[in-house]
Every structure is written in structure tokens, then in C-alpha cells.
Image (cartoon, rainbow, N blue to C red; front, top):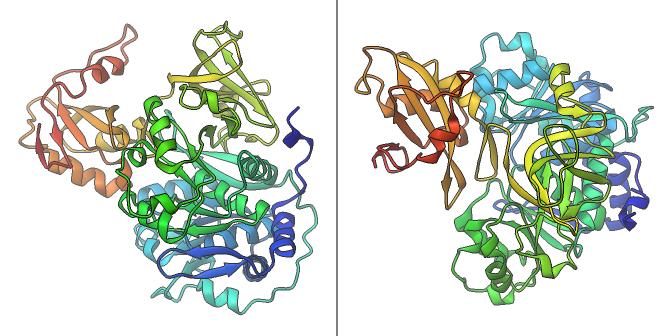
Length: 526
């Protein structure tokens, strides 16, 4: 048993936040990159109490589902822990979502309250009959007051009391969040995650390497990568330097300006030339996920720091990791060993473990993994075999126990860290007048890992002069978040088929860039 598995020292997220306030007090917990907003651990805990009292006075109670559509601002973390204090359920919403996507999440999650940033209000206003989903009185706007006199987050929190709440029954098993994740089944599924899920995730991540003093959060807090870094701060007293959005061009300056000692890297970062001030950095370690095998050594040399692979899913949190002391395996192509509180198997189609070196599906079990998919009992049944979650990812395991990712069973695309459902793109594109059939596939991209390519079969008699690439792109931009909009478009007479009549996407992907395609970025044919 790992020493980490002996005990997670907290029974709830509020207990963690309150203890962090006692231990770290006036130390800085949060610094906003840009406007330089600063919050101490003590101030954070107090603000979460005020927010909890404000929301309770408006009707939020244990079990209430509250959608939160905020960028990387202090209100995000404050609202999250406030809802944990109330025993309510947070439903994070991607701030890039358009009205159609937001409506789906609100309806599917049964959210009855909405905390939304002023920059996202137009998406909510784009929903027909929105007041029937979330009444106006239950919408709280963060930022400038909405023209419809909707409650303002800053005002109601500032006017509330920081009196401790007495909410019985809030513990590790309390449902904390419905976290949406894309897969191969079309629209996202809501993962039901308890407070224990987050306690375990934060505890494990906080102890997988040297505890950071000044970490960078530049990924959305609505995603797992942003949230576990936030939790690390509560566990070990780190200061989080938080950017509203990721910027590769700004990363170097952020590392130097804020003397960052922990961050997450990508292939693109590893390929950046050295920059002024890099020699002054004192990086404790760097986390990566899916970094190309040949880039580990150069990244370690660049920052003079250990680089370690992490693998996880929304459903399972921290799943595999390369121990910090395992320098010999760094850059081997392995994702490492099972993380604390996790058991992992590589399983064949017959449900039995495959031999070492053979490829199978990764199955995972352990403390705190998702309870199931919200309102989707069939999807939950399909995802589990007893206590084991089927990840949909293909792996092999060597004779020393190390795991290596080999591919995906799931029909999804991973672009710049975003998991995109191919079926969702296909569903939207199929609504374009003149389009008969669609197929979205991933194509390799040096900068983003994968890009989205959309194949179109047009209706008889319809030509690409009528259904032009700009028209297709414009239609998708109206319906999809920006990161889901296809970069490449190709017209095809008919799709290759499997023996069962399904589109043979593996045949499309094989020569995805060998034929004439329209490139949205280049704004022309290639």
C-alpha cells in the first residue's frame, strides 16, 4: 500500500478549506494574472461562507443543482466551496458554450440555479424559453449588473454574513458535482462526482512530487486540470497564479514574471526556443500528459527539472502516474504505475486480463471514482463491469507493471487538451441544408495534438459551390464552441463502409490529409 493511501485527512471540502485557512492564514492563495487580484487563504474561507449564506438565502439547499459558467476568476473557487458547504451540487459549464450547448447541460443536469459571468450572458439569452429552465430570480450574474436586473454575484456576497453554517449530512459521500465529459456517444455525459472524489484527487496530486510554492493555473477551472491544481493549493499552501485563458505565446513571460515552480507542459512548450530569464527559474517539476516520447529529455534540459507523465479521466481522477523518483523511466513512453487509491487492469474482449505486452482496454477501480452518469443508467451500466470502469482507452502493460497508452476505442478527438465528440460535430453539420451525411475524424497536428476534419457527402444534385466551406464553418460556429469547429473540410462522393454498414472511419483517417481539403486556418484549399 502506498503511504498516501493510509488516510486522506479530511471528510469534506469545507473542512479542507477551513483547515487551510488555519494553517496558511494570511499567505497568498490566489493571484490573478492581469488585474493582480489577490486573496489570502483566510479571506478565501471567509468569502466561501459569505457566498454560501448568500446562495442559501436565495433558495439553494442540500441537493440543489447549480450550474456555474464562470471563467478563471476568484468567484469560481469561492462558489465551488460555498456549494460544498451547502451540500449542493455544482454543474461546471464551459464558458465557450453557445446557447444550444448550454441549454443541453442545464436541462440534462436538472440545474435550477445558474451562476454566470457577464461575458456568457448572451449564450443564456439565446435559449428559447430559458425562464422555464432557470427562472430569472435564480440567475446570478458575475460582473456588471445584467440589464434585466438579475442578482449580482459581487453584491449578494458582499452583503452576506460570514457566519458558519450548520448543514447536517455533508461528508465525503455527498454528491459534489456533475462534471460533463465528451465521449463517442454524442452529447456530453454528466459524471457524478462526490466530495471524496475531489479530496482524493487533490491529496494525491499534492503529494506526487515536490510541493510547489508558486503554481500556474492557465487551463479552465471548469476542467479537471485547473481544479486539481486549485486543490493542491489548499493541501500544501501553494500560491496559484491564475490566468483567464491559456496562451502559449504568454507562457514564457508568465513563468519568469511570477517565478513559477510548477506548471503543465505540452509538445508545443517543449519545442519553444529558450527565452530570457529561463536560467533563473527554479522549477520543482513539470506535469505532462501525452507528451511525445522524444521530447521528455529536451524539456527536462530546457527547464532543468523532472518531467513526469500523468494519466487520468474525468471519471476516475488521478489514474496512472510516473513517480518523481523514477527518472530512468522518464521519456520511455509509459504513463507510469497506478496512482494511489487506484487499481488498473488491461483487459481483452473476453473480459479477462491480457498477457504482458498485449494490447487491451484499461479498466480502473478504486476509492472516489464516479458514481455513474447522471440520468443515464444505460450508459452507467455499459461503463462498468462490477467495480471496474471501462475507460475506452487501449493500453499495454510491461512485465515491470508500467502502463503504455496505445490508442482509443472511443470515437473522440483531442484538440489542445479538449476532448471533442465526433458525433456531436456530425450531428450539427448534418443540419446544414444540402448535406446528406457527415463524418468527423481526428488528424495529427504538431501544435494541437489533433485537429478536427469534417467529411461531407452532399445530397444528390447539390454541389460544393452551394454548400461552400465558409458556409459550413459559419454554420458550425453558430452551433458549437470554437474549439469544436472543424479546421479541415473535404467533400466525398460516398463513405467507405464496414460489413455492418457503418462508416469505416479508420479508412478515412488513413489518408486524411492526402487529398484536396479546405483549411479554415489558411482560408483556402491545400
